[in-house]
Image: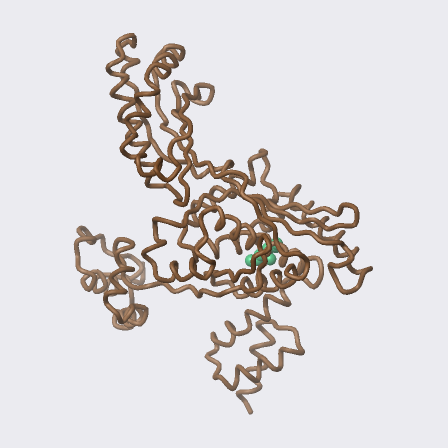
Length: 444
Ligand code: MEV
């Protein structure tokens, strides 16, 4: 390799180093100009040490902060209540699109949302070398003991109205020789519940093994249950929320004839996303623009949400659109269903000051209310995207919002920005066109 910085040296005991030592090591080993690399980290480190420590403690080996803008989309009416939604996202046009869709629907009855279920789930995955009927008898005999073993862990959750709602033995030997599961369902109230659920699982796995050893009807190989792993599942098809909008077709656009055509094209676009995976993935990506932005702003686990949402979209065996649209009796209906395992207590919610701020902005929602807000953000985003796609195309709005990024890339001064923005009020934005206008301005 020509450039020695392309290969970093191996390091041991890195996590034991102080933060300053870590920064020194990484900037010296991976950067051509280590001083400049350190300056960038310093700029993105909070001057208030207490605040910075709080963030550093979220993860291991923190070296600075990674900023995302937090924007707000006002004028959402959800179940007749007006709300401003916080969105943490880097993509230029997302907040603007959400705000547009919110305003559009605010004059047409707003968004309706409802939660269809809040069940969380997980499994102890284990291998049992023996007779499935004898395993079933063992399970039936010991089910109460298994549940009893989790009682200390579930005590507080039960006091809040949650806990384990079902425990079953599932024979999965058709998939894999000897493979069984303890399938467990949970209600976790306002918490996402990952730590609670996983603690229950580790206890269940431990007790399962212990009880099997003590179960004398089992042969020696049957007693040696092999727990492969015990973990919650991010596939949560029964933790489901729905968001919907509707209005007479004639009210969709100012011109009635155009309204009909728009509604038909919109429905056709959503139908294509239901049938064609190439389109479905992008269609759902548009939904996730809204979903993820609120999931992040509310301090929730966006990887878990994304994994669950996409699994749900493929539940039929084919990846499909999460939303559907139809025209019925002259009324346009557009709705979205998606699984969302999120929380409003625990995790980052009390720790991250911006997360707390976002919760307060949303009226300190409980988990069910937050599920509704997130689903609405997804539907709004999907509406805005498909509306643009079947009318002007998305680039017009997108590039308008992206204009400032291009100008910042070329380090435009405030007066240059003002002049270029003014120019593009009447012209189509493209990277090439912006550069041209800027060059012309600078050559004057
Ligand atoms: C871009 O971030 C999202 C869209 O591509 C979504 C869509 O095509 O529906 C505009």
